[in-house]
Image 1 (tube, rainbow, N blue to C red):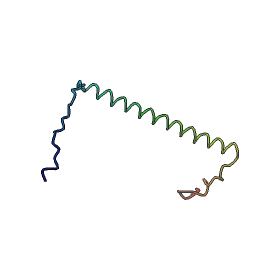
Image 2: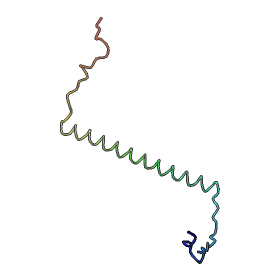
Image 3: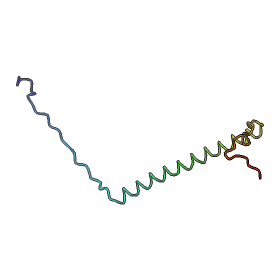
Length: 82
């Protein structure tokens, strides 16, 4: 049972590396940078989607593909004339 252990020990040398300290300002700058990137991406994607929707509506109007209007048949209040 004890004969399964290696005869010589394994020695691991850990080289010391310089430790970089992280300050509160580093964390805040990183958080603001990430927030700025996400905000910029949201604005760009929103503008792209808005442009696609406006272009689609203009193309439908140019090709006369507008569906007939149902505004007259969808009354919420009764038509009362006095």
